[in-house]
Length: 200
Image (tube, rainbow, N blue to C red; front, side, top):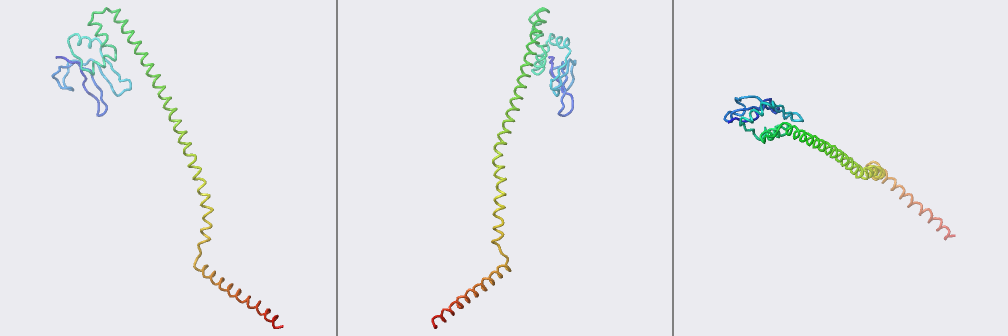
């Protein structure tokens, strides 16, 4: 039984396929009867090229396409053409049906493109809104950080005054001892005149 299927070509992680008519018992990348097209999945548009007359020849000869090849032919409108041929439609009807299918496909592509543009604009708006919210949330925290260093600057000199070196502490003790001795001597001097007054 003949099948229309893909034969893998290309490098590692860069596949490229040939659409071939091959015996169903042959291995996937083995011997084939005829090359009828190519499929490149790497390109954004998923480019599919085929020989229309040869594909229709093999389909009319009873060749069965695999699911993947059928979907590729459906995407190019060839499967619709084959269905109309099987139904016995004339050339005018086939041409009008294909034209209607092509218009429908173009409209769908426009709708998808418009949807992508709309989604991109909404995503950009949402991103800008999140950025503004993050900025507003960060503003109070930034203001608090800018105020915090001023408070620490006011506190730091007080801490430095409280801490004394051992030499300064000893000098302060000596000063307090001298002032205490002087203050004790002054009351005695004041007492003496009072006694003299009493004696008089």
